[in-house]
Length: 465
Ligand code: UDX
Image 1 (cartoon, rainbow, N blue to C red):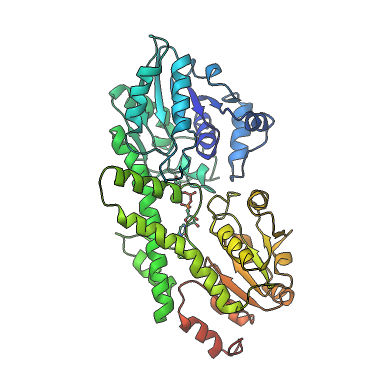
Image 2 (tube, rainbow, N blue to C red):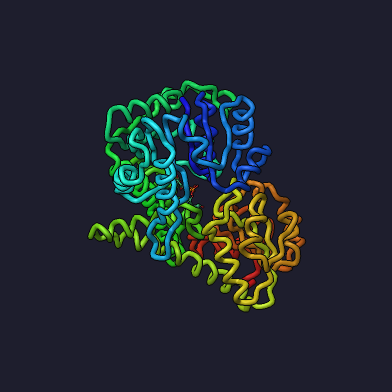
């Protein structure tokens, strides 16, 4: 099928490349000429494992092209995916101006029937608005369309895997025709009948659930899913605070709680809080939607508040250890909001660094992928070539993003580079026993004093050191 994907950000580019890979002719459109030039030159506007190869292969196969003008792309396409950004406005509501602009442009140049699919994360009833405004904007009587919602659940860092092996595909439609077209578009993914670009020996999988509902419900499913996952994280972070004060081990607590099939172990990792371009903004937008509808969404406001407080709590932890922060050299491992991405939007690591800078700390940082983007946000720190350089003469190392490469470091070498062998772990990625054995002081999230006592008991750390 001829498909247009408008917006070449995370959602748009992964969707465009994925749809081309399963056999569709895809035109990916973005009005950011610079981005289109980078893509047409074979470059990538951001780091995402596996995406560069997927784009390259499908461009070479002439199933994927990149252009910057909507009017040159939509007329030939039966299905049009809207994948533009919906960032948060000052008041937390979703900014839909790009969605509206795209709708206007489509109405001006489309002819005949088109299925217009909103894939951007939007508040409930946006599809209804789109339908109404297509009627208002259209300059050509022949243009008629169905509007559908098809929320995405891609995670940065594993978005290719998530495109080809989703837990479900959700569509919100008003017509059987729209449902049938979307089923046809996703058929290879639904049947799991494609040559998997992610796994070499991809084991056969069962059919992916195809959830067909109305547009409003589909839009709500996205906000509800992300808000629930964010709530799980704030829940375990809340419990981790209790573990710290009563002397319990949040790792064990989360493990046992997660073994309950009704709860599930994922998204129960305590840490410095959730970040990224989705959870913080979707939570805010959902709260505004709830309030706008006169519903009590205070539960989610609490989720947000707990998340914001993670930064204070972690900075206090550092101050507890370092006492006076001013003039102290601190090494930071990890700047991205999570591993396997170069994205630093709403990254807890940057929020913590800003706080320490305000207190006069000297920060050296390293991240495998995100330093260029971090430099644009926090230029006033030292960016290092590797994790060892960040540890040089440091009074403390802060582990803020759980990149796997940090677990493969020569920790003895790190210890000798540091002024004080102290690791404050914001992601509980290290084992306290291993670090104690190497003579480090180790402070983690949600492990009460018992864990530290353990270190003293083993005599590997001097009392009060
Ligand atoms: C999220 C959703 O997972 C995805 O379905 C949706 O489409 C977009 O938003 P993403 O933002 O890429 O994806 O990141 P995710 O892996 O969900 O992590 C979000 C944040 O939560 C990160 O900062 C991560 O570090 C944090 N997190 C995640 C925790 O602190 N603990 C956990 O157990 C899991």
